[in-house]
Amino acid sequence: MTFRFILLFAIILSPSVQSQDISQLHFNGNKEFKVVQFTDTHVNVEQGKNVDAFNTIKKILAIEKPDLVVLTGDIATDGNPEKTYKEFEAIFTKAKMPWIVTLGNHDSQADLSRKEVADFLQNLNYCLNNDQGDTYGNSNFVYPVRSSDNKSEALIYVMDSNAYSTLKPEVDGWGWFDNSQVSWYKEKSKEFTQLNNNQPLPAIAFFHIPLPEYYDAWSNKKVKAIGKRKEQECGPEINTGMFAAMLEGKDVMGTFVGHDHNNDYIGVHYNMALAYGRVTKTKTYRKAPIEGARIIVLKEGERSFDTWIREVNGNKVYPCSWPDSFVE
Image: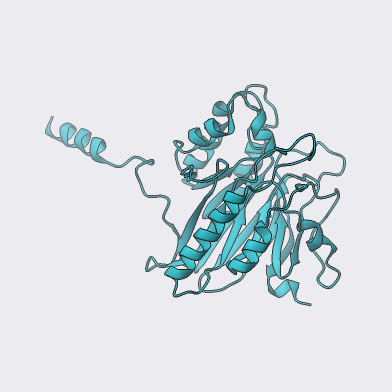
């Protein structure tokens, strides 16, 4: 009786996954931090739509064993997104894997609003979504990656690139960063820089829709992009200056997006890396590549990263390093 009482008491007092501080991201023993970027899964569990993406994710997790997963939009794109995200939660909980979601344009077409999806995500096990609602959009936050002595050594920005133009019919097409989001980034960048003796921390940023400058990265004749471009970049018609703000902030080394399923390249524009992930849903377009993910490895104390595409068949393609692979 006494043993059973003690065991029950211990269970009651033990922290749940939700209460544990999994948001404390740290470089591993090799002084590296590995991120796997999955994108554009377009899953609907109720209809059995694109559920093969779950197997792709499991296979790549087993190969890469990352420290963090980022899903860069168009994840649960119609039907009841709660049921679909519970399946993602089950995968990442079993793997004890912190994960983050940034919303895509098609995430606006599900049964819940973008805000309702964002609020729901914040209550899922191991999900680090932590939007405070202090700026436009529904997934804007930043996490430091810490050293073994708990010092901030790198930053991971997550931003909502929004969905569709808010100025139709005059301006058609995709959404863009609101001015308040640009200001938010500037404030966070300045804050972390000041805390680091006025030295910008190495940073990477994740969102869904490519910046207008992605075309310039692919068209850079002095430094060739690595990977494939099989469709035109579907960026916004309006440029509110996020790329310029990042250049001025001097912290962001590269941005990582989805949206354009047939592109998986990484290029540079003014020495900032602009990269696509690899579409994760099963191939449905003739031009689409085999499904997979992009891997990014940060190095503690270094302003650099390694990256490659891992395909579901296990192949590793387009390995490169920033900045070394992109020198004129």
